[in-house]
Image 1 (cartoon, helix red, strand yellow):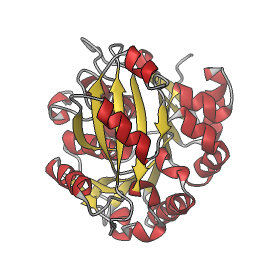
Image 2: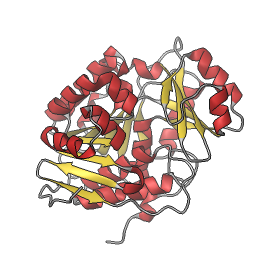
Image 3: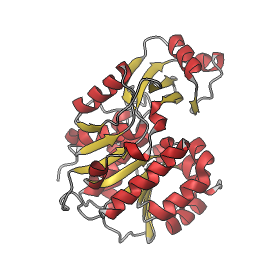
Image 4: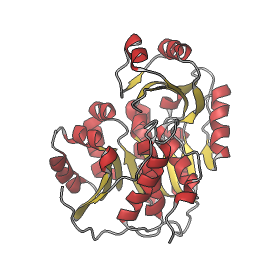
Length: 343
């Protein structure tokens, strides 16, 4: 793919009137259970490597019991991104539904500890807090089995209007889109943001997620989305093609700004007037790819909200993703602010 000049330059959004947060995330509030395993474990439990499957309570319990030595931490894709923004020194808030149970309390405390303002909707005890069981194989691939629990039951009534209005960018997690009420909440949240002259971003989350909601995602992108995030597989699924160049051509017609990751090949940033390729950052050893896309979005949005050029935004994304794939777990283990290039 050739590189074209891009004349689009983000403007500094952080000093706009009424802004309290750089980014406000909306997504599935889950507790991650991460364990290193092998291909034999995947075969025994009939798991498709690299996929994300939704499971019921019984399946979640059986997989949890089969794993040994797992690490438990608050998670969820958009929540990881908000933690990344906070690690860069940005201001982040998060809206996600947890139950009034032990895992719900753990999630809330974890978010507050890392500096993310968690806007916790009133939950209940009839449906437990969701959790994601992640098996990491030696090739650093992660296979996720997710019990969404109460997280998927987020409704428009759970939205914190004040927080959304106070965020320079609203960040929507594609994984949350499975339930009808959540779809309505997406549109309602985007409307609140745009009414206050804020920008709206969406992460496609997963190619299987795109397959389930392709038409809705295409419509949402056309109607509401200012900034789109995804990886190459998700983009190909969105436009039902096996040709990356064709998908990018289509994307240029639909999006104001899109950032598409391509693993070790870096990323491309797409606008209506051009495409720029940005190389990945070097990594001594890839340990676990969990959270790579989430942290790329964090770095990109940290730069974007501060008016940095798109090449720098993508470079910050790669810096963050390089850090997170060098260890187990979807969140940085050092302050990402310490990795910012010298100005």
